[in-house]
Image 1 (cartoon, rainbow, N blue to C red):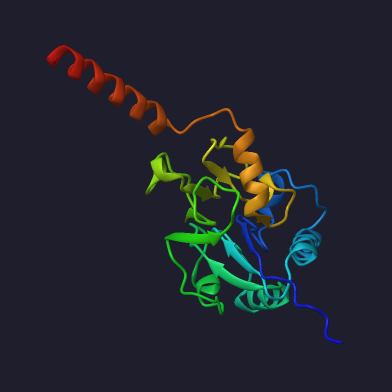
Image 2: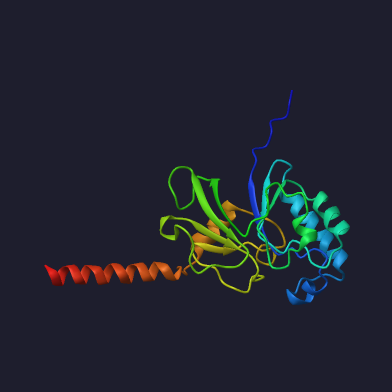
Length: 208
């Protein structure tokens, strides 16, 4: 009897900085060496990601690693891997066999029933840098980003998915949405929209 195949899932992560000794001190990652750092991140990735899953890496995959070391780490990470380019992703990273061509911005529709949109899916906007505004922000899209190493707070519709924000591992959309729903901070555009609607209402009342 065949074992049922586990349904494929989608994960998000960023800022792994494989091979970058400086990130240990910069981001206060508690490791004695970059080798220990890299091995821990690889183990954490493979502990949650299955071979049929997709991982969207939102930039800064590796830094100061040789092309051979980058390729070796990449080959050990489970799942179908896609890249949104970060500021430290040079040729050695871009030349890796990503499942899709690396992009600077990606709009993605993820099958998910418990998000902020109807129809059994959730649209996400993927970038390396955090955005103050993004496509379809008033229609339930969510902005996911990296770069800030957990130093820039998100909002109820935007979230840092970098390893420093998520215990050094990739994260699922379900986990992200729980975090978003708990955030009391709104994107600036929400307040701008309310103010504009109030001004239009006052103008209509004055014209009546």
